[in-house]
Image 1 (tube, helix red, strand yellow):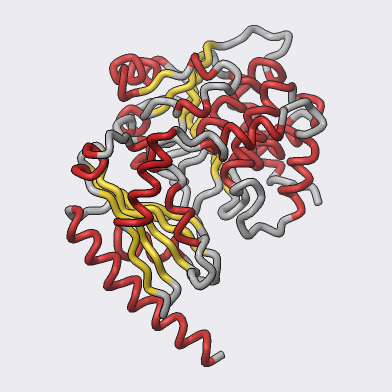
Image 2: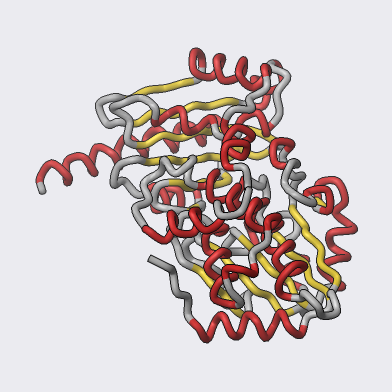
Length: 353
């Protein structure tokens, strides 16, 4: 079933884009496949479809952190500017822009250290996202469907409704399929919405190289990352089978000793749910002077609510994250005590139904 968006919002989106002369496309910090795929997908669609035959505005793609190495195969990934390596240039692009298009994040805190550049900008601000509670006051026009499979899927339906399916050329299709594939865990996560599979099927009419995308995403661990994974599973995994909870933890000293980086930890949280009894998994990692948590669920426990309640984070019902306000050891204690209590209560309520 095709996904139909609010026509008034789509028309407003198109009007804003039609007036723009200097556009910045931005996505969230520690970019994942959906962030990079949606940012580059929007970039290519603007260039090959929306402005085709017209005067091309300046279009920049900005990220708070570098594009991960395993996504640099995406077309024109080398045009991405990141704030970690060139904050001044990123801030200047924001200041010069007359339109800022945010993708795959719901508020300014998700693009640190570019949050002030976004909030202080006088540019028109557009947002396309699939997270809960988008900042309606910050953005002039918001197209948001919480818990849709991915922002890349949402962009596909936006592009189709704004122009047509034929407006999506191969570079756009490859970027969007990459984001859909990663945010759904290669279509493994709980998502029964037919719109996801219709969008994927439409994108596969292009020679996107689905097997190649899958291998680049899921079968490309470095030797170092595999060794780090082995260490974490054998030395830093805590399991609570009585409530179906497991978590992995790693502090800065561990990571340095292993010769790893934050990129080596991407996706490892998913291993917590590969054990049959587990319904909720988490990872706590200390990187770049911050303690970050990732949550995953395969039952009906809402990790978005938990992440927000105890750590001020959020995301989706089955996949959420947070930057902890506590130090590493306190974060572990807060996580363990509250998750065990919440899951115990959840199990009791479930059994009573």
